[in-house]
Length: 249
Image (cartoon, rainbow, N blue to C red; front, side):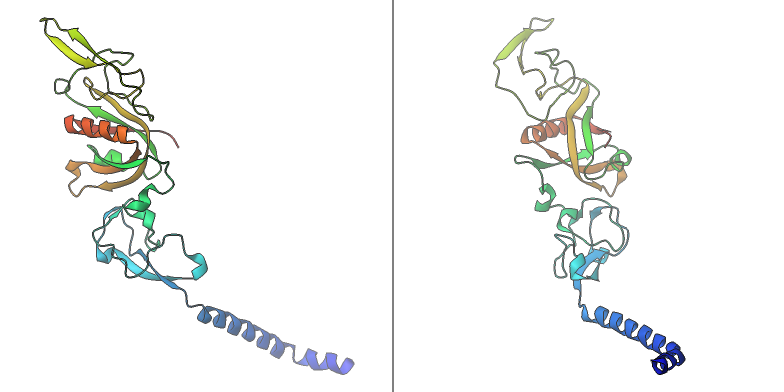
């Protein structure tokens, strides 16, 4: 027994070195034995917008670290639109690009609605997942006037449920005796006519945002809306400029 103690005592440094070397060898074998999977990743910090072939690189990741929906080499991303900022080296996934994956997890009946916001700087303050109100601004005379009808005042108001039951038209006379036809809509429902701008839709979720090449053209936001809200946004956009109000997260 004492002979063994003396043997190992004299050679403890050699044994420690051998154990350390074997540990390193095992680690190297483990790394070399893992082939990994090639995926597409951002070549640099990207602000969002239309992609070119040079915006992505091939990155190898361990198979256990692959995110769902990751894009693989062979998938063409040139010309597709990135929904928001992405960091260098971040793997590209399907929900990062405009397409079918954009509505993943949304309720049935929700559509992706693109709208152009007049102020590109304001649009950069929001990111996917933010909740906003969309507002319309006009000089006033360019909009048809609804007036105060069935609980709706001046302004364009919408809720997330769309219009209520159809109501009959009512007639009102102006100062010159001319009879104008206006629509009676339930209180809280969206109207397709408004005076001087106001709130177009409220509490809609941002799905994506892309800046225009020319900042004077504003910026494009893609919103999760109902079909009814999409129609109201299209009407408002055709008559004036849109802006946003951002709800706290």
